[in-house]
Image 1 (cartoon, rainbow, N blue to C red):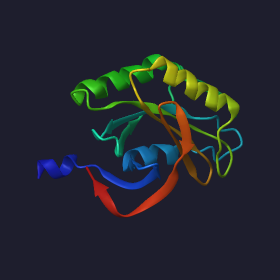
Image 2 (image 1 turned 90 degrees about the horizontal axis):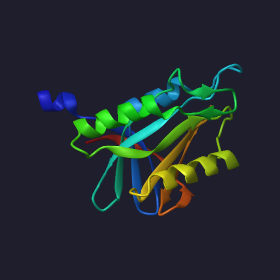
Image 3 (image 1 turned 180 degrees about the horizontal axis):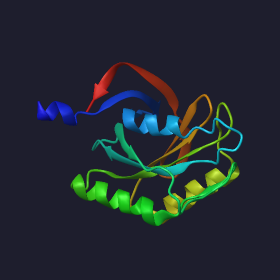
Length: 171
């Protein structure tokens, strides 16, 4: 019974070039809660934490931080103040025995179907440069109606295709 309580559910995902990104339900819920539904809602942002299969065919997006008071947020921009987000990442990595690691970042855009700006691409490049120990990254933009995910493997960024899983996948 205790093991059942710890199981996680993955009902949506993204796929690209043989890599399946599975999004844990609690992460999707956080994204939904932070969509910029109103004209005065600032962009939301956070970091993504995941475990990755040894052959990198599946990425289990298990956790995401949410905006902190120390983050700088406006309607069309954000700047993550990394200390508080890093504390959460360090704790998750420790509690998982190192299986959970930084995967990338997520943020919102006040548009129905979001696409990355040049500032987004520059930020993603800086994040990859700051973490050369990782080969895979993922960046997510949450729009008003849809969510876009971008996979980066060896610094090559491609847009992933959204998929809805008919049967919830459990890890």
